[in-house]
Each structure stands twice: as C-alpha cells, then as structure tokens.
Image 1 (cartoon, protein in one colour):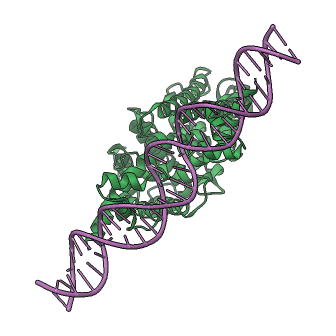
Image 2 (spheres, rainbow over the protein chains, first blue to last red):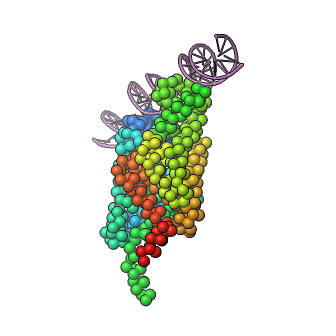
Length: 208
Length: 208
DNA sequence: ACAATAAACGAACGTTCGTGCTATTCTCTG
DNA sequence: CAGAGAATAGCACGAACGTTCGTTTATTGT
C-alpha cells in the first residue's frame, strides 16, 4: 500500500535525524518539513511522538542488523565470524551508516537514567545485540577457537566498550587514529584468548 | 555576592538535570520551577540558553575533577596513581555523582555529529580528560612501572572505552556485574603491561 | 466507473520554549 | 541608615512543540 511506503520513507529520515539530534530532539514539524509533507499527515502514521520514536528504534534496528550482523553471519561460526562481527561494526561507524554515529550508542546514553517505554525499547535492542555478540563468542569457544575458560559475557562487554570508544573518538574527537586504536585493542584482546589453530600447529610441527 | 551563590545553586541543579535529560533537554522553565524562582530571574544570570549550557559544562567539569581526578593525584605518580584513577572513575559512576550517569559520556554522545560551541566545549573537556589519563600512563611508563614500548594514547583509549562500557552497563542495562566486568577488564589490561616491580623481583629471587 | 477506504492536508488547539522589557525588591557599601 | 547597584520578579512576545479536528484528495476493490 501507499501508506506503507510513505511510512518507511518517514522512518528512514527519522532514524537519520534522530542519530544526530537524539530521539527526543527528533521533531514532527521538522521531519514533516524535510519530507515536504504536512505535520498532521505525518503524525497520522504514528498517533503519538512516542510511537514514532518506537518505530524509529525498530527501523534503526533493521538497518543495523542488515549492515552489521547479517554480513558477519556469512562467515563460518567461531573465530572467523567473531572477527567479522568486529570488523563490520567498525566499518559501520566509519561509513556513517547513521549520519550522527551509532544510533544505539547515542540512544543508550540519551535514555539511561530516564524511565519509560522508549528507554525500555532501547535497552531491549541493546540486550539483543549484546546477546548476539555473546553468542558469537560462545560459538568460538565451543568450536575450540578460543580459551575454554573465557567468559563470553566478559569479552562481549569489552568488545562493546571498544566499539563505543571508536564511535566516540571518531565522531566527537575526529581522531584520525580512532579505528586504528580500536582495531589494535580488539586484535590484542582476541589474539590473547585465541587457541593456536590446527593449521598453525601443523605449520609449527612442519618447521621442525 | 548573593548572585554568585544563586548562580552556583542554579548550576548545581542544571548539571544534575542535564545528566538525565541531556544538555538540550535542559530547560530554563523547568529549572526555574525546581529552584522556585522566576524564569526571567534565572535567565538573567546567563543571558542565553547556550551560555547556561556552557556554564553547566564548566560546573560539571569542576565536580568531575573534584571527585575523579583530585583524589587520585594524592597517590604517588606512576602505576599506583593510574590504578587510583581507574578506581575513582568506576566509583564515580557507581555512586551516581551525576544522577543520570557520567555527564560527559552523555554529553559526548549527545553532541557528536552536531556543530556549535557547545559541542566544542564538550569535546575540549573530553580532550583534557583524555590528556590527563594519558599523562598518568606516560608517568607510569617513565617511572618504569609499565612496558616502555606501550603507547600511552592507545591505553588511554582502551581504559576510557571500559569506563564508557561500565557507565552503559550500569545505567542502561542495570547489570549488577557492570563494575565487576569493568574492573577485571582493566586489571587484565594493566597487569598485561606492568613490568615486574622491584619488590616482586626480590620475592622471586628470594624464593630460589 | 463508481463507491468505499486510506492518506494527506490546513488550520487551530493549548503548552512550552527561549528571549526581551520594565518594575520591584533586596543587598551591599559609604 | 540611606542610596546605588545588583538581583529577582512580572509580563509579554513570537516561534515551535505535540495533538486534534474536519475536509479534501488519492488509491483501491469491485
């Protein structure tokens, strides 16, 4: 239907605006102006600002999954997929998939410390993401690619922190070395828990 | 002057509100209401909302330095001071020095991707903080407490990322293990670059 | 093609926003 | 203790906010 297409184009724009101005700073009037439609026409699609915010979070999540998660799932489970996930996260920020930096990082820091359904939705999305990251790590452990004593939640915490750090250095500080820093932090940590691969063992054995 | 006292109490409240609602969400009317004074009376202290925001950033910085930086400076330079800095950062968030979580983390993610003097002020404060952190690391290196090949800016990036991660896990996710996670991440990293202390060398030598 | 339905519009609502004025009250100081 | 100057209050402003309304224009199914 026509309405669905319009709704989608509204949300595409809303997500971009919100990544810059914040979900609270996102305004119906401004959005309508940018899309050259009436406030009331736009408003009717959602019924309230809060519903618009929730829909924007949902739309942002789809884009996020498309750009960050899905490509990494093509890699074989275990270490390669985990590395791919980290790589695609950094490139997701580097290529400004959301013009204001990572939508969810921004939303997380905007709504922490404030109650409400919007905050709950943001927290839920972040939990989903952290769970996905943790799952990738657990698989790498179960495949024997990393130290079996490794706590997946702990590593997920650390990797996610590096992602936030990269987003911060790149978008606020405009640090040219932002991704270099993040990459080497991640690499050091991952190499630290990696178990020597069969291939490498064979290589070492062959050398003798 | 009476005005100075009033101004200070306004800023104290403004900083708290802004840490929850954001610097943009901070509103003169609401602030005046909470402080039981008139909008215009409050307004006269700053002349514009932007000036209020800048003053709030300044006030938040003073509180931050007081709570995070200054206590750590009492420790001897080098590794002890670096550890103290990390500890006081975590406790600063744990004790909700700002009710909405770290003021500067929130402001950083609110204003990244948006131009203007407020953003510049936030970025400058964060640069100062990162420089201070880096300095503490460099001292530890110069004192011979950590690996001389260590890049201080790199470690500062990583520690700061862990701080953001702790703030996120604690304030948005309400993860009970937030600080445990952050602490062990920090400890692992610091122990990794630490040079064996003289004391420990003596201990090891004595054991033989 | 026509009736039914969906989508978009324009105008207005009451509030709140930041920002000016002008007047009043308070607080220091001589 | 009086007068100068700072601090605060009161009121009004235009603009923007989210929201509601009745109406008009498009799109759809038959």
